[in-house]
Image 1: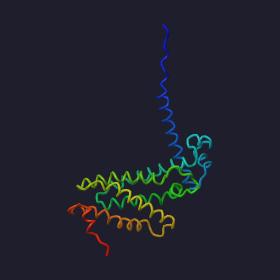
Image 2 (image 1 turned 30 degrees about the horizontal axis):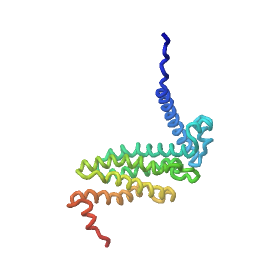
Image 3 (image 1 turned 60 degrees about the vertical axis):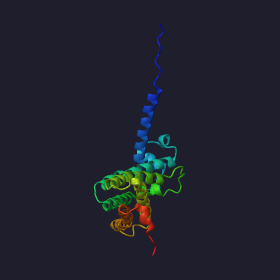
Length: 227
């Protein structure tokens, strides 16, 4: 009787290769971030490859070009902000303190990691097949929205405000933070954080007040007038 050779499980082999590739990309992304921190936001692919201990052809085996590496670095940068922000926000109970914590973590992060921030946000020579800044905003806002939604539900409020609230906080603080860095930090981080918190807290407190108004936020908005 003729023996039958069992078929090779190509799916398993492909899965192992895909896992190895993703791990290697993560390692090279981390090396690229360290190279950016050391050499500045205009660092080239040669310097990144040298910092990673690989040849440039090996680097291009995992990233087709600088644009693809820029995207990976931006996504990791957003994750780093979120990893610092979530425990800071979750560690405080009051909503105003949560807003203040989120703002301070973000400003402290971009201030301390200026080269990485500039590499991600200000890269005019990169072909942008995707908007990495929008990806970072999505990452951070989604994480904040989960926290804000939990807090709203805990107070018996509609959690529908969580996502637009989170995007509003992130977009507003990112824009002001960018101005702050470009102007070489004309005021202290603490003062800027307090200004932003005071401004944003007015909107958050308005949501809370609306919960006690018949008809909710829409009814309250009808009563607003511009003097």
